[in-house]
Length: 515
Image (cartoon, rainbow, N blue to C red; front, side, top):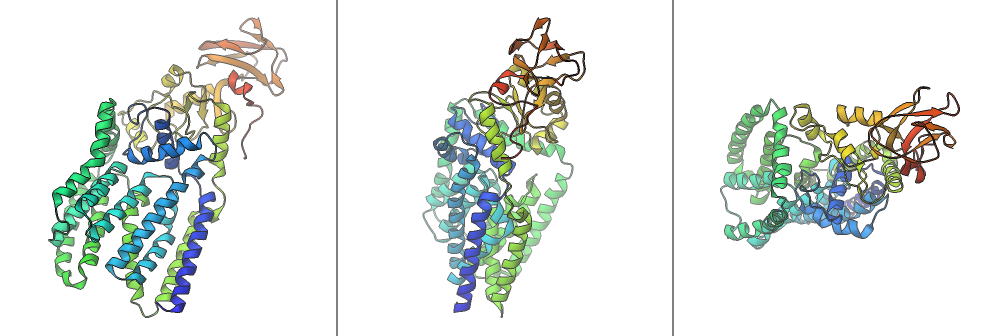
């Protein structure tokens, strides 16, 4: 590597780090990040995942991050803090990319592969987020390093088992390894039984815990049956299964034909990339860029190997970097600050509610509060609701748990829940509280969630007669119809949960629209 190449390499590495620092504070929070953090919070609150609250992912990521969350306490900017551990996970993936690039080719390739993958937009943005996929990718990359370096079989199995305890998509990676070994006709791992022993340690310990916690059936339902039910909504799965056989046969033919074109490990991983892609697209129902995170570093290694063999590699690497930075600028919304929306909502949630009070949100966006409805409203849930596999019991659950706070309205709510919340909750800014506007001079209104309520106008508490008695302040109201006779005819009046008003919120003066 000459002086100009080193200068370009380290310049791009510095740009990558600078952009990551910028995006860390400004790139929007994904709904999955909020959900994962809510799941981690459940452990800190003494609950058991699956049994006491919903999640359809494997549990290890949430168990490992729960102590960090517990140390931070309740704070509106918690997601920024919880992105810090993802930086360490990112560093592991980059280091493993370098090591594998060096093992497959040389040090030059390893360095360029690490820089290329760090700037690749899907990897760059997803690796920022607080999500299981990042720890999953790191464990997979550590597994590959141990695999290639011929480390103890039990270590390889242990890492792969830990990856399975983070994400069930590891089953696709295991299938990839087994199919690739079969195609290559080699046994690169000695003492396979020791690998199996290592593999069962982490999943076995977790299964033992969940069985003893009475959560076995809930775990099976959430992680297997619930996810599998998505196939009910798919009509083309048989096409993908058939395509898998055809594509795999074509891959086997190509692998035999071009066996001598590459050294062993590049040949092995080239086939592994193809097998994983075919397997993922054929058997996984919901596919997104994050599902390809485990092969992005391998693709970067092959890309770097190809470019370094060109006549003018620096121009190509510079072009790749410019294209990647341009794409990042676009997909990260020009690096505008889009984290403040969630921080603002969290700030209101922590002032409007107290620990232990229920909040009806979509996927656990308020993080520190229990949800009255079991399922998270993600695509899989909504698909199953449309087909009658899951009932929308939000109204009943909100009333049963005396939930007085809900997330703002939006299209993600299922129809029945949306109609109930829109009718029986009033807007306070980023969140809603139980109550109703008095739309006409009749003064009639309905309470859905029993509790203590106040009657407000734009100046504070209104004057009038509530259910035949002079209104003197907050009053316990049962579910059902009520009537408020205004002292000032035509005055705009709203009935709202009393605690919301005591805690500084009113539907007449919306708060937290900006932070």
